[in-house]
Length: 411
Ligand SMILES: *[C@@H]1O[C@H](CO)[C@@H](O)[C@H](O)[C@H]1NC(C)=O
Ligand SMILES: *[C@@H]1O[C@H](CO)[C@@H](O)[C@H](O)[C@H]1NC(C)=O
Image (cartoon, rainbow, N blue to C red; front, side, top):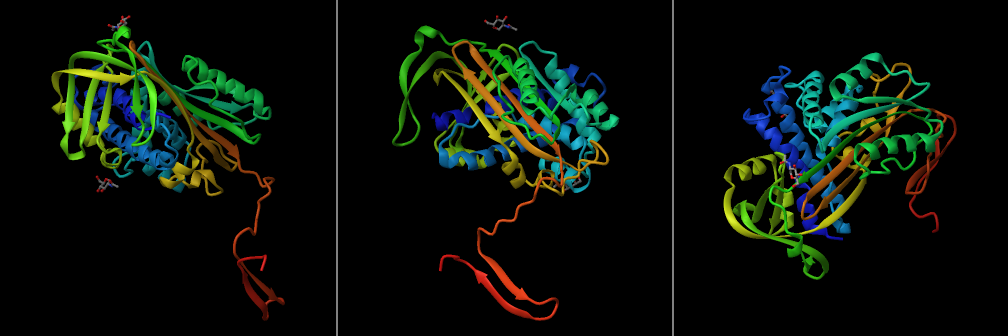
């Protein structure tokens, strides 16, 4: 319901990751992230690619949501981590599409560089209380993935692994959903709706964040107010208020006010209030965020921010296909790095996210699921003549006796 403003807040999770990544970029803090000998040279391009991917995915989701006036909320790092883990097992054109789609330049980076970078990100996140990121892989009892694939997932993506019986779709979905629910403190309870019975593996990534504002809002100051969705529609909200010295920036070029609200744990939320949402959505890039953070000035402000609690759910098959990652979903899929001898394809990529903001702070959670199934010929292919088609009547290889086009079978 609260379309425009919540769109702004998508950047919170981007920024949560962003800020620590920036620290990595600049090598100022979080040196522990680099403790295992990774060089900036190999991690920076992955960080950069992840940011670019975040904005490209945002624009796709915004394009799909625009007509419906929906909130947008997702965790770019969760989607990137799940697809990067999938790309470990992808080969040929399928791998190339995933790699390029995620923004990785294969003349600069190898899969092992990407794996190493995610090891650093996930390892770094996992070390904080109230903030966690991880992956898991659910494998059918009768399916034999390659040892090398499982090894990379465990070593670099910190994947928890489980055996399940995917011939029992309800039970296995419950197992996966229970795991995600536990990892997200019950914020995401039903990532998987239903599973195809030819599923052999389910890959997922989750992220959970809870932060207290460095300066909390006083609940006594929270008052009913209205939120203007557009020129016509208003909705009631509980508006929090505070008067404090805060970091802000006004970006003239895209007519957007930027507010930086830190949590007391080294993460922060970036809130963007544009004059025209379209301008902001179309133009925003990682370079903008870098510039804003550098140019912020501390000033006393009166801040009004609604309390809210939102949930989103996406099936990303179409969006990822549009972003160039088409082959994994069809008979051209090459996932031979996961297992030999069986033709595998991705049945679905789903993503869910939540964001709760109140006087004390914010809680955000997200999970991405990737269903992998066996491509079986018993899946009866379909051919439906429900759109204009041509016909011919022929005899063997000789003549064409009749030929025509059917545009309207009723005439
Ligand atoms: C990939 O990297 C190479 C070498 O650095 C560069 O020439 C090329 O333009 C890059 N490709 C893309 C798509 O950025
Ligand atoms: C952050 O704020 C919360 C709530 O006020 C407090 O319990 C917690 O100890 C603080 N954490 C740090 C690292 O200061």
